[in-house]
View 1 (spheres, rainbow over the protein chains, first blue to last red):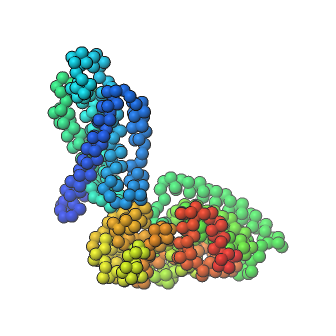
View 2: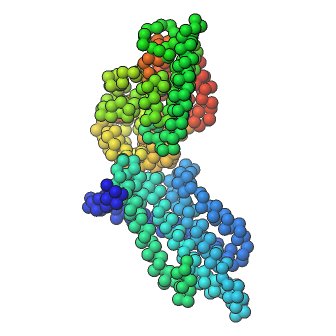
Length: 225
Length: 325
């Protein structure tokens, strides 16, 4: 049997769709474990990236730190936090926030830093304050890249939120960890398939969202990303 | 059991290299021991009881160990005790998992390895066995081991799954045995590896043997940092912790006795290649088993794992204290 036949057999068993710990419950739990870290990472990453892009100050340090930050092993950080913090919600939240910040920050920075200097000059010439320049000119122009950063981070988080199950929480990782522990390939393959499907949903969601928020004149730029 | 998990590809590759070394060294050691046998100054063997013994009984034995700290420590204990009795020993520590070393001891490229009777039986010798108690497991081993192999006397020390609670919980509820949990289980969350939920010696076994039904079950890890943190944090009130996990000392935990053998016996036992044995060797190893308790092993595990003490001095100090060297 192939991966897909294992996964399909397991996903289509009606017993797996009802009761506590069923697929719909863990699917929702997984989305729950993904949304909050993404929001927090966006609240940190976008302002930081925009500020660095706008001022140009600390850009080398910030981008390098953000990029090397990506090397932090999420599972290792999770285990470390369990040992030192116990089982508070910070324990699963922080590793996912740490995972999501770099792509958001780096893309926001690149988006704003890449704004054409002539456009900035024009904004200044039109009498805009620095704040107006950022919010009315630079961020809208950077939006396609900011959305790319958010989308990348969302895919990372959705795929990695499976580790919540490592410390006894729910989500789609529950199927993977429990299946591995009891040598049942069905839930392992099925859980992985569901995570992949969720990631595809996330891509679709961001395609729609980008279309809604990016100004019409910039969409062409967004598509080339 | 620390040894339950199969080796990963990487470990297997390393182990394969180690085995090549074992094979190479054993061929050289057998030649050296045959020359030793012809020499009058050959190291003492109090008897020549086994006429089939070739190289081994005349002096040199190969003591192996699996690739985790406790097993290396046990091998170190065997090595030093044998050397004190004048036996020539070639150490081959950190070989790999059972899948790797078991075929080697069957062939005699390793002569002695510290084993755990329960997993030795169900993993390597007879997967269908349902023997649980130390006596039953040892009897099954004696009946089923290949003719070249035997196990000597088991130690009282075990490294098995257990039901473990914090000292505070144990004191509050006067817990000594798993049976004592009866009035409290309904208000306790149990923590263990995910498969504990379905394993026959898991929740089902605790219910069948002791009538325990817990309030809930948290899937954690195999007696690792997550389980220990959950227990000390109060996220779970009882957990499956291996009986020689050194954090039992540092985290102030209490392992509850398992008089009904819900978890099968995992006594430390020397697995030996028969043709390499003589009575000095077997007497020495049996003397170690007679003295080795879980508490002593736990202390030594804590020393080498948590305090990074030297294996050989830890082993040597225990042997000296027990009058074995």
